[in-house]
Length: 363
Image 1 (tube, rainbow, N blue to C red):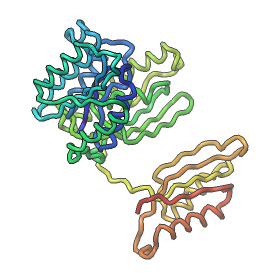
Image 2 (cartoon, helix red, strand yellow; image 1 turned 180 degrees about the vertical axis):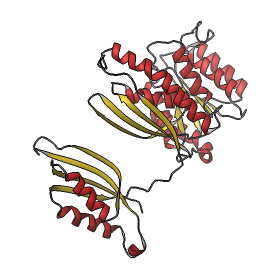
Image 3 (cartoon, one colour; image 1 turned 135 degrees about the vertical axis):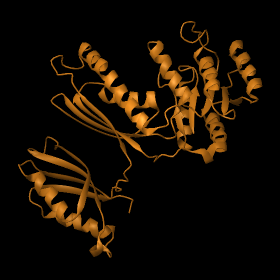
């Protein structure tokens, strides 16, 4: 399930963190505003609307105050009032959980009467009871107990299909954050994997993302794929221009980019071995390593090539995740046999200065 966490930001910063991490630990997906927005405008409200509308459950966390009313954007409501009213309007199931948690203040401090009245009113409407906690440790126990009631509705973390976003264009500060914000904030997608390569102010970024549960109002995968691509095509030019204006990107860099969104129903081979190989920096050295691995039937699932640390002059470091699929001749072989085979391969390979191999906990 996806639980939206609602509270005053600064008043309950640490407590929000406890609730969010407890939701994640219980196998659910927490939805929340990360930080207090500097500019409280329609864009900030739209982000709030999308997150609340996508939630399956609502957790309201309160302490002393109800917050400041906003006449222009929130219909004269405070943010936590607005979020609850919006959730109650958007929920499709009348039994969708609404959980109230309130920190008990010190006897020298009095909470706002407006807050107490608002909680009491909603307790009556929703026929629920606020759970009072005394300190962070008490909160941790209470939220864990509450979430036990929903342990059979945990999210599917390997939902198919996954959506692959591929970006090729100018690199700038905030690129990955911009791509991930569109995918998560607008479509509720979880980012499972990111590969980012950049040199000469050009970047290639590959993002694999998936849905933990079906996103409301966008049921068809084809529809979601088209909407996500169109949204990125429309939004990124403005972000790139903002980066130029703020000196985060050279104004002489060509702003053109390519963006693609595709579906991925594949079942990748689990990584079996993790290797770090330091070699001399010479033409053909990578080819030597790849040729030997290919001859031994090891697949390179993930690969990174970078310069070695300064003390290893004119050397490069290859970081690889490898897998080995058995064939008819390998019936008797086990992981230890393949590990020994990799060690022999690197030990006698020309140009290899050092290597490290670890067998991962998978078949």
